[in-house]
Image 1 (cartoon, rainbow, N blue to C red):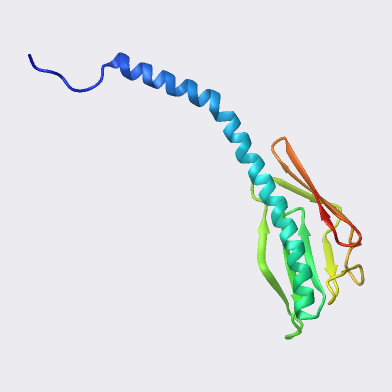
Image 2: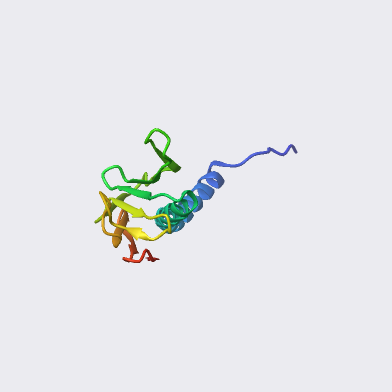
Length: 150
């Protein structure tokens, strides 16, 4: 008697059915966990940019600017290096690709001591920045003294 190797159609159907049920049960919670992680990462990157702006102001001894662009869902840090009056972007432009960013301020500035300032075109230092992804939402609040809280 010769043995045939392989699987029957019934065995394959049972395995695929079980795999489909596992994916249907485990899939949505895994997607939700991933979305929360993306939202947390976006808020963390904004807090890091805020710290970078303060540190850059202290390091360079000039005013550093944290630009927040809600229309483009992005933010970046700029400092005037004094070279031909050209502002230099520090750390690159950070984009919130999959969600929506909104803010009541668009330009936060820090003086050479790293303290928030609202001179010139700079907005008042207190800001509320809201990140949305699908139906999830997270808020970053910056006080008038520059303290960042979630």
